[in-house]
Image 1 (cartoon, rainbow, N blue to C red):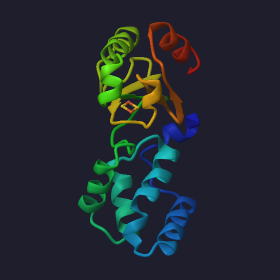
Image 2: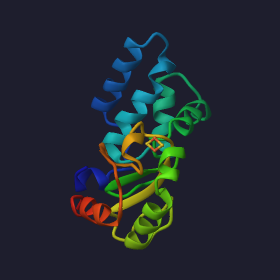
Image 3: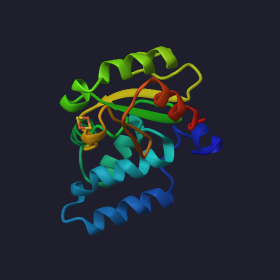
Image 4: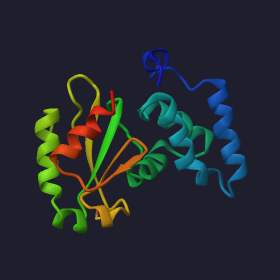
Length: 165
Ligand code: FES
């Protein structure tokens, strides 16, 4: 996301984005079925989905903001609060738990100076828990943005973090 876009994160949805959402709605069987994809478009542009943008998308899809918010809340990759430049999703499901998720979490928390659910002071990382990523054969596992990482130990975590500025 560019600085200009970050500065404008409370700006109304522009015409191009509204058109993209309208096109999604047109191709869906029901307008509201485009809710998740529409919210992903907004998040891609602004980094998260603000209340204002949620209400604008809801109006385009002929839903109430509460109805669309329930979609956003159910789908845990839609962020309803500002997040850091990179989002770490650390799996806390069974295979990862057995294979050392706690040690990985403790290392990440200490290294980043945050608890789960928090963003580092420099805005570089947000650390969130997530259910199984389907990477169980390399547990413990996490995603950073769109990238999957596994076999996490302290050294590997440090090396991975260095790759995200
Ligand atoms: S349990 Fe963690 S990736 Fe499946």
